[in-house]
Amino acid sequence: MATIEVRKSCSKTSYRARVRVKGCPEISASFARKTYAKRWAACIEADIHSGRYFPQTHHTLFDAIKRYADQHLFQLKDAGKRSQHHPYMNHIV
Image 1 (cartoon, helix red, strand yellow):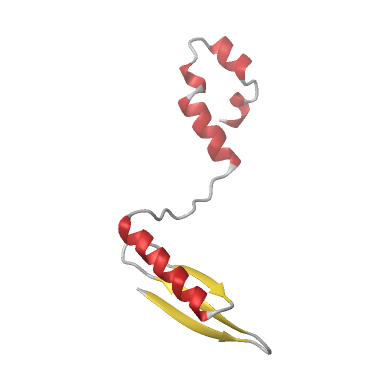
Image 2 (cartoon, one colour; image 1 turned 180 degrees about the horizontal axis):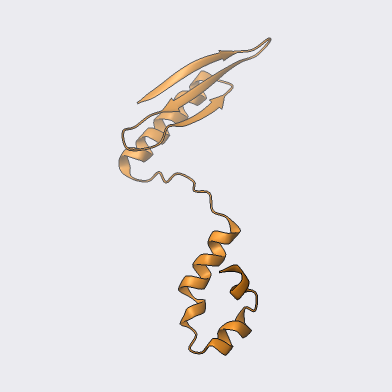
């Protein structure tokens, strides 16, 4: 379900749209106009219900290197080729 909050500062008014659906994290964004907030909330809510919305995940460089080592590097047949392919991998993993 989407809610729109009015946020007033000294001279500006902004609108925060929040979308909460059971089983998904809360998603929010701020807009200068209420109509933009309503449109965004409706689109996000529709995407969640239809299965098209995928929240952004935070991956680090270490996660990428670890996944590379687990999935690709150890498919090489001998240890000499593994260490030659990436000499720093022994220190990281």
